[in-house]
Image (cartoon, rainbow, N blue to C red; front, top):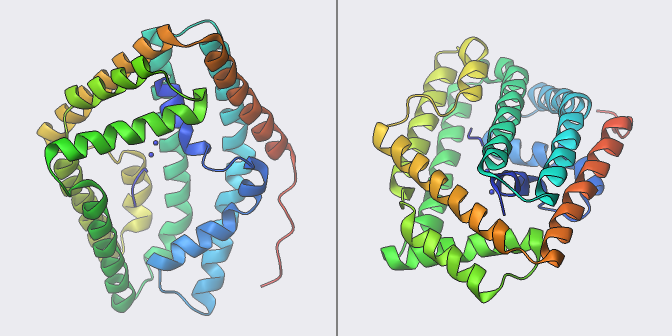
Length: 286
């Protein structure tokens, strides 16, 4: 399990919430997606499958009641800050706020799934291990292939796409600034790959020892502890380069770009507020 991702650190981290333009529809079907995704890793059937459904429902209910109101307030505050122009303090606030929400959500998810993990059979644990191996091969295909220049170009392209989701089309000068960021920031995908495998190994050992209930919530909430110092340093250097990029871009935003980004935050705030106040959709009997 990983933390968990992808104009400001506010925009960068909240872009995780922007994968679907119909947020309300997507959220009401999130439990279905979670069941499908969890089923890829947990080869459960019969009573265990029913238990997995119940635990996913419990997490979804918690998220609707507890996390969504916080997301709504966060989006409102982000819109206010962005509307007046960003400072470095705003960017740090955005990053820290989303990291806090991610840690809380990971802990809540781990607390609910851990009892089931502690009862997996050796065959089911091996199934999980195989799925991790498939994920690692996919990560390598997407991030480790090609020369350094090719990987930096792909990173620049992805960054432009994420930013344009929020502010609309970037100018040539803004795109050039993104390219400069990608050239300056460390490429640490090999270190990230090793860290992913380390975390996977820790989880598998935890499950085999039947210690998920005891250890997983704390470990999930603090997924970044125990990183190799070189990886931690490279990650921090890349983050600081990204913060600098966002500050520079904020200074060059057109009025139209800023209005669009602020409106997007406010729309998400409205969606999250509405979803938090709704009763959970009726679930089919099991």
